Amino acid sequence: MIHNTNWMKYLPLLLAFVLLSASHPARAQMTGNFSTDVAMVNSALATTVAATGKTDTGAARVAMQELYRLWLQFRAKNYEDPANGPRFVSDMNAVQAKLYAASKLIDDRQLEKAHSELKTADTLLQAARQRHGGQSKPAA
Image (cartoon, rainbow, N blue to C red; front, side, top):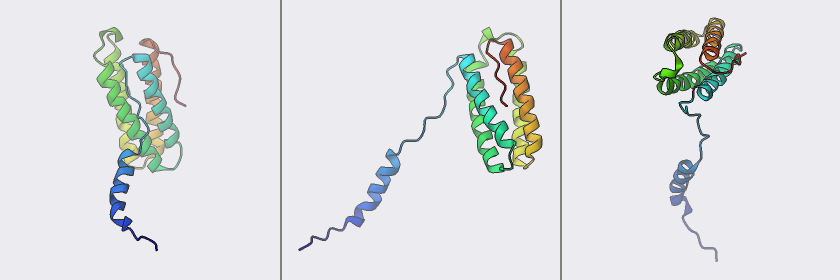
């Protein structure tokens, strides 16, 4: 004789356990080391430049969100360091203005213009990176 256990009543509990224990990939976190942190921003910038070079607005939005998330962390960890020099904040504000403009253009589905703003942000970031002690590696 087969014992019929009502296993369905345990399904929601099992599902909840699986969802809670599923590991999400670790997101990059800023360290406060300028060279390391700017490299992470640069990588996200390269991804966003590539995404805006295509016709997929959704991919561009996702890439821009990650770039902006990293940028905000970068600001929080690196803006106050006096070792960065007198031009650092103005350099970073210029980069941020281009990132903000690109974000608005992506929201408006103007990927070509966003791509141009991001390329300018990359140029500004690389100049600042060289001035403030990091190695320059253009985004794309």
